[in-house]
Amino acid sequence: MAVPDDYTRARIRCPECGVLNDVPAAAQRQTADTDKPRRPAPPAETDTAAENILLGNDPPPPTPEKPAKRRKAQAQAIQIERPRAPEPLHPPLPSPNANASDEDDGRPYRVPSLDEERPCPNCHKTIARDAVACTSCGYNLQTGKKAKQEFEPVNREWQGGLPAQTRLIIFAAGEVVMLLAAIISVVSADMPIFGVFFPWLLFTAMTAFLLGTYDRIRLTRNKKGRVRLTKTWTLCFLPRPPEEVDVHEYGGVVYGPYDETSFLEWMVLICLLLCLILPGLLWLYFVFIRIHFQVALSKEHGYPELVLYRGSDQTMVVDMAHTIRDVAHLPSTQS
Image 1 (tube, rainbow, N blue to C red):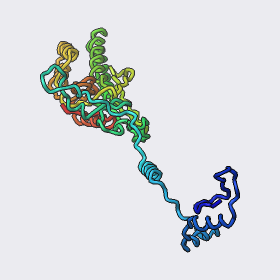
Image 2: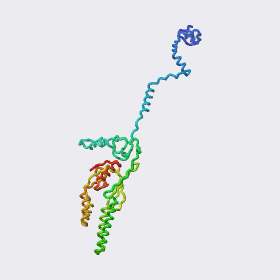
Image 3: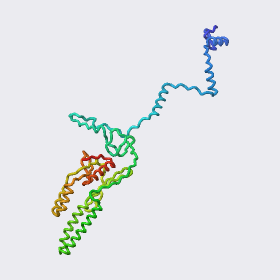
Image 4: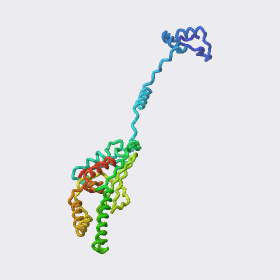
């Protein structure tokens, strides 16, 4: 049986009976040598590189990365170099002017300040719409934490008119003079005691009211920035309990001339004029004719809501207003 030239197997089937027969080794070698394709010999450089790798002389050449893995590695490197900014805890809400209009179409009118300002979530003071932290309380709108800041302590006190010690000295001197006059009237003129007692009582009541009635303003701030404003009213040299004022409930400080009079001041003037002419004229000059100034806390539209001081000392008024403005971070307005 003839073996085909391209037959490379070790056994061949007989086409007549179907029995497998061994192919002679010579035919196999001849077929394998003649028909099997030969691989080209590797270059000398490849053999040298493989030998160096096997012997451990040189590190293996880098394996080329796939394009997809290389792009993924570059994207991760960019993310590591440029971290994403954290989302702010209090992002700006949509402006109230979103549905407003300048036309007469039934919708509310636009307010330009609403596009530029917003309240602080912590102290509710007005800050810039794109602000990162509140300038009043130090609250960070992105992290929700309050910056630790140490403030300079402040302890200031203001009192209208004469000092308290001077008022007491004048009152005591008046009492001594009035007492000596009463004794001389009783001893020398034989006046009844009741006739002397009533003028002395009236004089004491008027001088105690005029000299002993005043108010005292005290402003303090500790290292943590807590501001405390107290107003103490003294009536006839008897101090009343101090009234604490929360400055954060107000929106500003108003100071300037004041030319209004109250019903109580008119009643005091009438009583003094009916009793004694000289005290009435003094009250008329100091209360109605002389120029007065005031310092007040305002809420809306700059209207004085709480009067802190009212008197004739303009220098003290300006000093008080500017100190409250700087310590409590309130805008000041001069009327």
